[in-house]
Image (cartoon, rainbow, N blue to C red):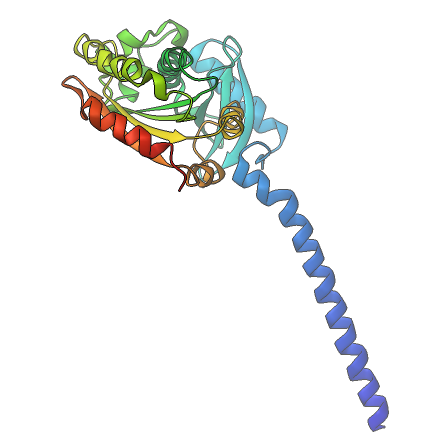
Amino acid sequence: MENENEDKRIVKIVTITMASMFLGVVLIILSFIFLPKFLNGPGRRLFPEGKIAMTKRVLREKYGEEFIVHDVYSKASHEYFADCSPVSNEEIVFQAAVWKDGSGVVYDEYIQNIVAREIEKGIEEELQKYYDSVFVKVYITGGVDVLYGEVKSAQDVTMEEYIKRVNPSRCWIDVGIDAEDGKDHLEEEYAFYESIQEKINNQKCPPLHVVCYNMDAELQEWCNDFFTYNAGAYFTYTHKLAECNEMEYDCTAEGVNITYDEFKNMREELGKDE
Protein backbone atom coordinates (compact mmCIF):
# COMPACT_ATOMS: atom_id res chain seq x y z
CA MET A 1 0.00 0.00 0.00
CA GLU A 2 2.84 2.40 0.88
CA ASN A 3 4.48 1.74 -2.48
CA GLU A 4 1.21 2.41 -4.25
CA ASN A 5 0.73 5.73 -2.43
CA GLU A 6 4.33 6.66 -3.12
CA ASP A 7 3.82 5.94 -6.82
CA LYS A 8 0.73 8.18 -6.86
CA ARG A 9 2.66 10.99 -5.19
CA ILE A 10 5.44 10.71 -7.76
CA VAL A 11 2.95 10.74 -10.63
CA LYS A 12 1.25 13.81 -9.10
CA ILE A 13 4.56 15.64 -8.66
CA VAL A 14 5.64 14.82 -12.21
CA THR A 15 2.26 15.98 -13.58
CA ILE A 16 2.44 19.30 -11.68
CA THR A 17 6.06 19.83 -12.76
CA MET A 18 5.23 19.20 -16.41
CA ALA A 19 2.23 21.51 -16.21
CA SER A 20 4.37 24.23 -14.64
CA MET A 21 7.04 23.81 -17.32
CA PHE A 22 4.40 24.01 -20.05
CA LEU A 23 2.90 27.17 -18.51
CA GLY A 24 6.37 28.68 -18.21
CA VAL A 25 7.11 27.99 -21.89
CA VAL A 26 3.78 29.54 -22.89
CA LEU A 27 4.49 32.67 -20.82
CA ILE A 28 7.96 33.01 -22.33
CA ILE A 29 6.56 32.71 -25.85
CA LEU A 30 3.85 35.28 -25.10
CA SER A 31 6.41 37.67 -23.62
CA PHE A 32 8.51 37.48 -26.79
CA ILE A 33 5.43 38.19 -28.88
CA PHE A 34 3.77 40.97 -26.90
CA LEU A 35 6.36 42.68 -24.71
CA PRO A 36 8.44 44.13 -27.59
CA LYS A 37 5.25 45.45 -29.14
CA PHE A 38 4.36 47.38 -26.00
CA LEU A 39 7.88 48.75 -25.61
CA ASN A 40 8.69 49.55 -29.21
CA GLY A 41 5.41 51.13 -30.24
CA PRO A 42 4.11 49.58 -33.49
CA GLY A 43 1.95 46.54 -32.90
CA ARG A 44 0.58 47.61 -29.49
CA ARG A 45 -2.95 47.32 -30.85
CA LEU A 46 -5.34 45.92 -28.26
CA PHE A 47 -8.61 46.69 -30.04
CA PRO A 48 -10.36 45.34 -33.13
CA GLU A 49 -10.52 47.15 -36.45
CA GLY A 50 -13.75 48.82 -35.32
CA LYS A 51 -11.76 51.12 -33.03
CA ILE A 52 -9.55 52.12 -35.95
CA ALA A 53 -12.60 52.99 -38.04
CA MET A 54 -14.09 54.89 -35.09
CA THR A 55 -10.89 56.90 -34.66
CA LYS A 56 -10.86 57.84 -38.33
CA ARG A 57 -14.50 58.91 -38.12
CA VAL A 58 -14.21 61.17 -35.07
CA LEU A 59 -11.06 62.83 -36.42
CA ARG A 60 -12.73 63.35 -39.80
CA GLU A 61 -15.74 64.92 -38.07
CA LYS A 62 -13.44 67.24 -36.12
CA TYR A 63 -11.06 68.33 -38.86
CA GLY A 64 -12.87 67.59 -42.13
CA GLU A 65 -10.08 65.44 -43.59
CA GLU A 66 -9.00 61.81 -43.76
CA PHE A 67 -6.55 60.17 -41.36
CA ILE A 68 -4.36 57.09 -41.13
CA VAL A 69 -4.38 55.23 -37.80
CA HIS A 70 -1.04 53.53 -37.15
CA ASP A 71 -1.95 52.01 -33.82
CA VAL A 72 -4.68 51.87 -31.16
CA TYR A 73 -4.04 51.15 -27.50
CA SER A 74 -5.41 51.85 -24.01
CA LYS A 75 -4.16 53.96 -21.12
CA ALA A 76 -7.40 54.81 -19.31
CA SER A 77 -10.78 53.34 -18.46
CA HIS A 78 -13.04 55.71 -20.40
CA GLU A 79 -10.93 56.50 -23.45
CA TYR A 80 -8.42 54.80 -25.73
CA PHE A 81 -5.41 56.24 -27.51
CA ALA A 82 -4.28 56.20 -31.12
CA ASP A 83 -1.20 57.22 -33.08
CA CYS A 84 -2.38 58.88 -36.29
CA SER A 85 -1.33 60.83 -39.38
CA PRO A 86 -3.33 62.94 -41.84
CA VAL A 87 -3.52 61.37 -45.29
CA SER A 88 -2.43 64.74 -46.69
CA ASN A 89 0.92 64.63 -44.84
CA GLU A 90 2.10 61.34 -43.38
CA GLU A 91 5.21 63.04 -41.94
CA ILE A 92 2.97 64.40 -39.17
CA VAL A 93 2.35 61.76 -36.50
CA PHE A 94 0.25 62.67 -33.47
CA GLN A 95 -1.57 61.09 -30.55
CA ALA A 96 -5.34 61.29 -30.13
CA ALA A 97 -7.47 60.25 -27.17
CA VAL A 98 -10.97 59.06 -28.15
CA TRP A 99 -13.98 58.31 -25.94
CA LYS A 100 -14.53 54.55 -25.94
CA ASP A 101 -18.19 54.99 -26.84
CA GLY A 102 -17.17 56.81 -30.04
CA SER A 103 -18.84 60.08 -29.04
CA GLY A 104 -15.82 62.16 -30.01
CA VAL A 105 -12.22 63.14 -29.41
CA VAL A 106 -11.17 63.74 -25.80
CA TYR A 107 -8.07 65.61 -27.01
CA ASP A 108 -5.44 65.31 -29.69
CA GLU A 109 -2.05 66.77 -30.56
CA TYR A 110 -2.63 67.28 -34.28
CA ILE A 111 -2.18 71.06 -34.45
CA GLN A 112 0.98 71.32 -32.38
CA ASN A 113 2.50 68.43 -34.32
CA ILE A 114 1.92 70.32 -37.58
CA VAL A 115 3.94 73.15 -36.05
CA ALA A 116 6.46 70.77 -34.46
CA ARG A 117 7.15 69.17 -37.85
CA GLU A 118 7.75 72.62 -39.35
CA ILE A 119 10.32 73.38 -36.64
CA GLU A 120 11.92 69.95 -37.05
CA LYS A 121 12.38 70.43 -40.77
CA GLY A 122 13.98 73.85 -40.28
CA ILE A 123 16.52 72.44 -37.81
CA GLU A 124 17.13 69.33 -39.92
CA GLU A 125 17.86 71.42 -43.03
CA GLU A 126 20.38 73.55 -41.12
CA LEU A 127 22.18 70.66 -39.41
CA GLN A 128 22.35 68.62 -42.61
CA LYS A 129 24.78 71.25 -43.89
CA TYR A 130 27.30 70.02 -41.31
CA TYR A 131 26.43 66.35 -40.72
CA ASP A 132 25.90 63.36 -42.97
CA SER A 133 22.79 62.41 -40.98
CA VAL A 134 20.78 63.90 -38.12
CA PHE A 135 17.80 63.12 -35.90
CA VAL A 136 15.45 65.87 -34.68
CA LYS A 137 12.33 65.45 -32.52
CA VAL A 138 10.27 68.43 -31.29
CA TYR A 139 7.68 68.47 -28.49
CA ILE A 140 5.57 71.59 -27.97
CA THR A 141 4.11 72.30 -24.53
CA GLY A 142 1.47 74.76 -23.35
CA GLY A 143 -1.63 76.49 -24.71
CA VAL A 144 -2.77 73.93 -27.27
CA ASP A 145 -6.49 73.58 -26.47
CA VAL A 146 -7.16 77.30 -26.96
CA LEU A 147 -6.99 76.94 -30.72
CA TYR A 148 -9.04 73.80 -31.31
CA GLY A 149 -12.54 75.25 -31.51
CA GLU A 150 -11.48 77.94 -33.99
CA VAL A 151 -9.70 75.76 -36.54
CA LYS A 152 -11.56 74.65 -39.63
CA SER A 153 -8.57 73.32 -41.56
CA ALA A 154 -5.66 72.32 -39.37
CA GLN A 155 -3.28 72.22 -42.34
CA ASP A 156 -3.77 75.98 -42.75
CA VAL A 157 -2.29 76.69 -39.31
CA THR A 158 1.19 78.19 -39.77
CA MET A 159 3.80 78.26 -37.05
CA GLU A 160 3.65 82.06 -36.86
CA GLU A 161 -0.14 82.03 -36.45
CA TYR A 162 0.09 79.28 -33.86
CA ILE A 163 2.68 81.16 -31.79
CA LYS A 164 0.62 84.38 -31.83
CA ARG A 165 -2.69 82.76 -30.94
CA VAL A 166 -1.59 80.01 -28.59
CA ASN A 167 1.70 81.26 -27.06
CA PRO A 168 3.17 77.83 -26.20
CA SER A 169 5.48 77.89 -23.21
CA ARG A 170 8.39 76.02 -24.76
CA CYS A 171 9.66 73.64 -27.42
CA TRP A 172 11.64 70.68 -26.14
CA ILE A 173 13.98 69.41 -28.85
CA ASP A 174 15.96 66.18 -29.03
CA VAL A 175 18.82 66.45 -31.53
CA GLY A 176 20.95 63.46 -32.50
CA ILE A 177 24.27 64.09 -34.25
CA ASP A 178 27.67 62.48 -34.61
CA ALA A 179 29.66 65.04 -32.59
CA GLU A 180 32.89 64.26 -34.43
CA ASP A 181 31.45 65.05 -37.86
CA GLY A 182 30.49 68.67 -37.20
CA LYS A 183 33.42 69.90 -35.12
CA ASP A 184 34.76 72.05 -38.00
CA HIS A 185 31.45 73.96 -38.23
CA LEU A 186 30.74 74.82 -34.60
CA GLU A 187 30.73 78.59 -35.18
CA GLU A 188 28.11 78.29 -37.92
CA GLU A 189 26.01 75.94 -35.85
CA TYR A 190 26.14 78.22 -32.80
CA ALA A 191 25.23 81.21 -34.99
CA PHE A 192 22.16 79.30 -36.19
CA TYR A 193 20.90 78.87 -32.64
CA GLU A 194 21.68 82.53 -31.94
CA SER A 195 19.55 83.53 -34.93
CA ILE A 196 16.50 81.97 -33.28
CA GLN A 197 16.46 84.89 -30.83
CA GLU A 198 15.10 87.22 -33.52
CA LYS A 199 12.45 84.71 -34.56
CA ILE A 200 11.28 84.38 -30.97
CA ASN A 201 11.11 88.17 -30.60
CA ASN A 202 9.04 88.35 -33.80
CA GLN A 203 6.75 85.55 -32.54
CA LYS A 204 7.78 83.23 -35.34
CA CYS A 205 9.21 80.59 -33.02
CA PRO A 206 8.73 79.57 -29.36
CA PRO A 207 11.64 79.38 -26.88
CA LEU A 208 13.69 76.22 -27.42
CA HIS A 209 15.19 73.82 -24.90
CA VAL A 210 17.69 71.70 -26.82
CA VAL A 211 19.07 68.36 -25.66
CA CYS A 212 21.82 67.31 -28.03
CA TYR A 213 22.84 63.63 -28.09
CA ASN A 214 25.95 62.08 -29.59
CA MET A 215 24.46 59.37 -31.82
CA ASP A 216 25.98 57.22 -34.52
CA ALA A 217 24.17 56.95 -37.86
CA GLU A 218 22.59 53.61 -36.95
CA LEU A 219 20.92 55.00 -33.82
CA GLN A 220 19.80 58.14 -35.67
CA GLU A 221 18.15 55.93 -38.28
CA TRP A 222 16.42 53.87 -35.57
CA CYS A 223 15.06 57.02 -33.89
CA ASN A 224 13.82 58.46 -37.18
CA ASP A 225 12.11 55.16 -38.03
CA PHE A 226 10.57 54.94 -34.54
CA PHE A 227 8.79 58.28 -34.88
CA THR A 228 7.47 57.40 -38.32
CA TYR A 229 4.59 55.62 -36.55
CA ASN A 230 4.85 56.57 -32.88
CA ALA A 231 3.57 59.84 -31.48
CA GLY A 232 5.37 59.84 -28.13
CA ALA A 233 8.66 58.93 -26.53
CA TYR A 234 8.15 55.41 -25.24
CA PHE A 235 10.33 53.31 -22.97
CA THR A 236 12.57 51.81 -25.64
CA TYR A 237 13.34 55.23 -27.14
CA THR A 238 14.32 56.83 -23.82
CA HIS A 239 16.30 53.72 -22.91
CA LYS A 240 18.33 54.01 -26.11
CA LEU A 241 18.98 57.71 -25.48
CA ALA A 242 20.37 56.82 -22.05
CA GLU A 243 23.31 55.22 -23.87
CA CYS A 244 24.37 58.58 -25.37
CA ASN A 245 26.43 61.50 -24.10
CA GLU A 246 24.30 64.65 -24.00
CA MET A 247 24.44 68.42 -23.61
CA GLU A 248 21.64 70.94 -22.96
CA TYR A 249 21.10 74.62 -23.71
CA ASP A 250 18.25 77.11 -24.16
CA CYS A 251 17.45 79.48 -27.01
CA THR A 252 15.22 82.31 -25.80
CA ALA A 253 14.37 85.91 -26.67
CA GLU A 254 17.57 86.87 -24.81
CA GLY A 255 19.71 84.55 -26.95
CA VAL A 256 21.53 81.28 -26.26
CA ASN A 257 22.08 80.76 -22.54
CA ILE A 258 25.68 79.57 -23.01
CA THR A 259 28.60 81.38 -24.65
CA TYR A 260 30.27 80.10 -27.79
CA ASP A 261 33.29 78.96 -25.77
CA GLU A 262 31.00 77.02 -23.44
CA PHE A 263 29.20 75.57 -26.45
CA LYS A 264 32.52 74.51 -28.00
CA ASN A 265 33.78 72.92 -24.78
CA MET A 266 30.51 71.10 -24.22
CA ARG A 267 30.57 69.77 -27.78
CA GLU A 268 34.10 68.48 -27.30
CA GLU A 269 32.93 66.62 -24.21
CA LEU A 270 29.89 65.36 -26.11
CA GLY A 271 32.13 63.59 -28.62
CA LYS A 272 34.18 61.75 -26.01
CA ASP A 273 33.48 58.13 -25.14
CA GLU A 274 31.72 57.58 -21.83
